[in-house]
Every structure is written in C-alpha cells, then in structure tokens.
Image (tube, rainbow, N blue to C red):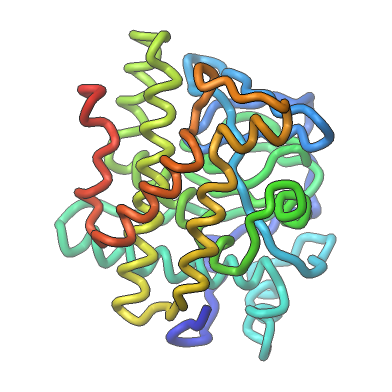
Amino acid sequence: MKFRDRRVSTRGVDDLRGSRATGGVALGGGAGVLVLIAVVVYSLVSGGGGLDPAFIENALGGGAQPGNAESAAELQERCSADGAIEEHNDCFLVKVYNETDEVWAAEYAASGDEYHAPRMAFFTGSVQTGCGPATSDVGPFYCPPDERIYFDLDFLTQLQRDFGAEGRYAQAYILAHEFGHHLQTLNGTERRVRQAQQQNPRAANELSIAMELQADCLAGVWGRIANDQGNVAITDAELQQALDAAAAVGDDRIQRKTQGQVNPESWTHGSAEQRREWYQTGYDSADPASCDTFTALDL
C-alpha cells in the first residue's frame, strides 16, 4: 500500500498506552464497540441504556509497539522517521487515519454537510472511554459519546492468528470501518438506530447488522475514492486483503470458530458473505448513497 506523500500528522491522535481504566469490565454500547473474549468464548453482550450489543471487529498486523504513552510530538517524530510507517502498526494506522480524514473532509465539504474528524486513541491493558471502561479483551472500536476510535495494538496479532485476516490493507479496512461509524454519528444514523432499537427490541439485531454493513460499505467507498484520487495506491491483492478481512469477521465465521455452531438469530454484524458484499458495493460505487442497508427496515 503506497501513500501519495509520507507526511504524518498526530493531530487528533491520543496515546493512552500508559494509562489504565478504573473499575470492572463495563462494556458500554457504542456504534462499533466490540468484544473478543479471546481465550475460548465469543459472547455478545448488550450495552446499557438500550445501546446495541457489543461485537467483534478485527484488526491485524505485526511488529512490536512501544509500551509507554508518547506525547503527540514524540509519536509524530517517531512516525515521521524513514521506514516508520512500514515498520510500526501505530504509525501505519496514524497515516491511514490522516488519509481517511482527508477524504471524508473533502467529501463533506463538497456536499455542504458539517464534518469534524473523530479522535483516535491507542491503548493497552485497559482504558476509560465515554462508553465506560474497557479492558485488554477489547479490540478496535468506535465510541459515539466521545467520538473516538480506540485501538489495542497488542491485540492485532491475536486477531490475525485466530481469524486469519492478514495484510496491511486489511488494517486500513478496519480503521475505515470504524470511521464509517463516526460518519453515522455525524449524520444521525447512530441516534436513529438506538431509538429504533429501544422502540422495537425484537428488531435490535437486525438494525445492528444494517448499521455494521453500512460501515463496511462506507469503508469500501473510502478505499475507492482514496485510490482514485491518489491518496493511496492499492493493488488487486491488497483489495483482496480487505475483502478477506470483512469476510473473516462475519458472524457466521466467528461463531463457527469460537462456538462450533452458527446461530443466525444472535448475529449483530452480518454474515461473511454480507460483509464482503457490502464492502465491495462501496468500493465499486465510490458513492455513499450506495450504502443504504436500511431500505427494508424503514428507518
């Protein structure tokens, strides 16, 4: 994956890797909050206040990461060094964050809609969020109340090993998916889904799936726009990495891997085929309007 330029900006990035959250494992419900009980059990738990079930997402990669928090200046200095983007997962994700923000800021400006970027935070061990405290069992997630994307970088290799979604562009897909949840917060989709889930709890999972598939589609839209505009240059093999990652975190594959059986009634993200299909839809269209996963739900 090649970038148009090598400049890295840590504006909007927080390094919380030296901090620890207080309290227990409170899994607050956010539009993209995910929980991976990595040892043996995959459990979907409902968040408080009518929020949707927590869910597994995915991130992947390799390379050791610093164990202590860095200041924004220190992180930028390290990530601006020659080869840092290729060597360090955090530097690569910061660069993808920069490019994702640039694309969506331009798209929103062109349409006249109000836009501001989410923040991105790296953590290890545990972290306090606007959705409540989260532990090291939590993978990448977006929290609507504080509009932050959280990454536990130590979790990346485990997800890669256990779920088999590999490659740098697969990492970019994960970040772009979480960015999609931020767009849903900006345009009111997240709020409308929460209200609909409260009013009709029986449709809660179906609504959650629609929101997750839309975030997959928006990730595909970003990938195509960024590639066409020259922000990044990806190969067919790298596109396949994103498609494989989307499929790898389908509810059916996760349940089969962790439980040995598939229960569609408990799905909150959609099947492997659905996730892959909606990412491809967004990538082929390069148009957010193609990402209407709610048509049949009358949201």
